[in-house]
Length: 336
Image (tube, rainbow, N blue to C red):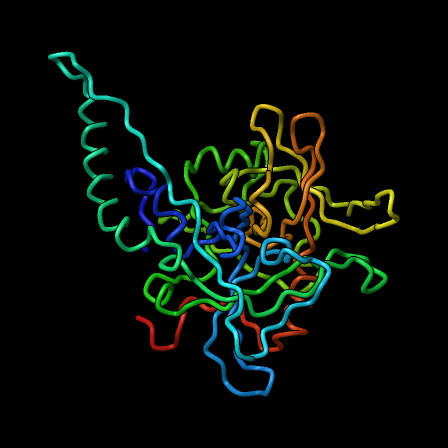
């Protein structure tokens, strides 16, 4: 579906059915477990492993979003038997307050009635075309190596899964790696809380903020101290980026180095929560900083969010898909 402005009553309902980043995902075999994640970024395969031209477009998320067994490698080899399917989830459930019985309706009541009418008209065809799980299949799992953090001396966490997307679900409205933003003044104040600093962030007039996927460590070092992400649970949030990588370890001697993002402040709540796994963390320059994979609780909140550095994610992707292209703005060359 096409993206509409946040003033449109259908904006949040259609979110799961658009092609912007942060689309809610769930493996078909997990749909009864309420286990969901978020779409991180898109990339075009370019060429297959045999060097032949490929038209496939992939979606990146976490291994633990795509697979129950995170200790085993998965790679679809074209053998008989369909690979795991992925669904666009989180179709909103609507409930409207009863209309006022007062003879004189306030302007707010009238606006609400109009919005409810628009929603009802929108939901009728939606229910017939997307309510069944098979109608919400957006792709198939192509590659998801086991989770690991001991592959090399850097000890970054590898927690990735790649989904080959269905062309007919995306080709019409695909725009590339964009996040939908709302409330420009508030977003500028998040990215640049010190008014004395001249912001390099430019709010897009169409609300679609392009995300650039960079392949070098320098691309995300020394950004502004604030980052953002758009995940399916906590939506668009902002956090304090630590320029020092975080060292983590547990009682089983599993240790790793991570990108760390702290909550903005107590008032604005968690930067992430369950269901945001796989989301793209980005900065004010529109550069991907990391792919979110976990968090550390502190009391009733997530004190810090951890992610795999963007440059390492790109390395992993290009080991499997050497011609991976993160910059295309059309799903297919022939797309309008």
